[in-house]
Length: 219
Image (cartoon, rainbow, N blue to C red):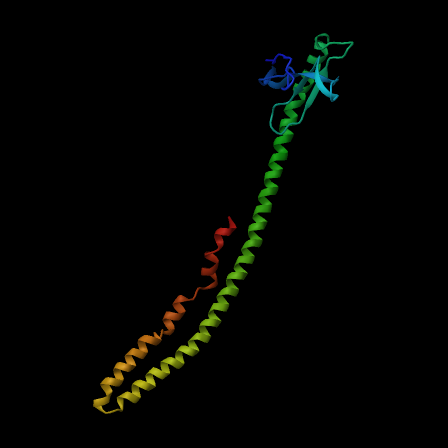
């Protein structure tokens, strides 16, 4: 279907296809499109300029409509010879295209598969490298946390030793003063909130646990 040309100064008025057209040569489809060619025309006025206008001559395109194939040929009117006089030539060329297209489809599919394999290999290699990086990071963070816990435990042990020594000393006081001192000792324990070594190691994450928390970045 061709849009008819109109004498509109502001819009593209060239005759052109509005629907895709496909012709079948046997079982092979050939895309067909016909467009009007242009020529330049000088427009005189206060400001002279050049614009493109329809020439009344046409160009016919034949192309492969299949994915991953690149095949296009065209024929056009000349002042000496119109397209309508070249139909036998054009049909012969379209038949050659129809014979060539199946091999282009196979070649395109082969290249697409090769590209898919290449991209998959790149993705797997990226995942492998990323996993190595994440595991190394998880191990380093876990080691750093453990060293921090060890330092903290040294400080906690000194606090525990202080509480134990204070409890022993209070036990040696007279019964009259023990009650007041024990109340103060309990207040000190609540303030210090001394943790056990089991509580501390329970909060530590191993390298595998650290890695499990970041492995989602591999996908």
